[in-house]
Length: 180
Ligand SMILES: NC(=O)c1ccc[n+]([C@@H]2O[C@H](COP(=O)([O-])OP(=O)(O)OC[C@H]3O[C@@H](n4cnc5c(N)ncnc54)[C@H](OP(=O)(O)O)[C@@H]3O)[C@@H](O)[C@H]2O)c1
Image (cartoon, rainbow, N blue to C red; front, side, top):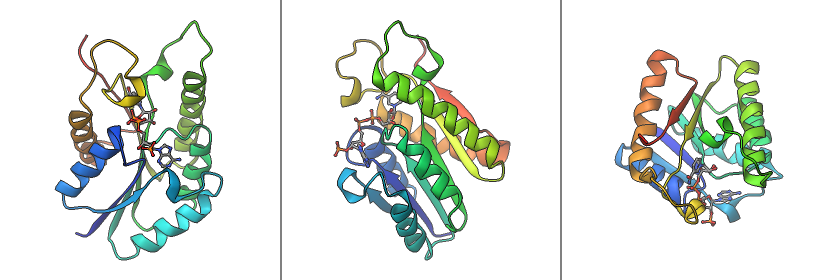
């Protein structure tokens, strides 16, 4: 079966490892970096994905980059697109399940977008949207934080296992963390 993986945020960190695993698993890649699209124009990206995906029997879009609230527009646009046999994997975070005594932007954005993505799952029950919420992962994003972190290569492999599993067991959201 010919399959396409579109990885949004592929140059570093978790996205880079997802792209590597996808390639190793026989996916063709459509890689989208920061300068390849305008987050305010999700329809243009959705149309580009649709065009690319026409040659494939399956298309999986990994929304890896932290896009803040713009992720919601992109998700909704993709849900309403005509991309055939579309699956979406959205990278949330375990921080959304924790309360912090500070109002910092990333935490607030991640928590609010998590609510909205859950809402989209309810609104589009037939769409294949999987949310992965990792704990700390060893990437540049949290290099200032000390503590045990997940190896991004291991996380990327887990994501593909979870994705395969979710197709049979209807998993919608999963948290992945190191054992502390
Ligand atoms: N690291 C963690 O501990 C952790 C934990 C839980 C969840 N997450 C989530 O996992 C995701 C990836 O995190 P990460 O640690 O891998 O981040 P990262 O190391 O900072 O890498 C993010 C990648 O996304 C790209 N990017 C940024 N804005 C983009 C845009 N508008 N379009 C396309 N690509 C864009 C960056 O491009 P450039 O290389 O050009 O800057 C970079 O390659 C994020 O959603 C994050 O919230 C991370």
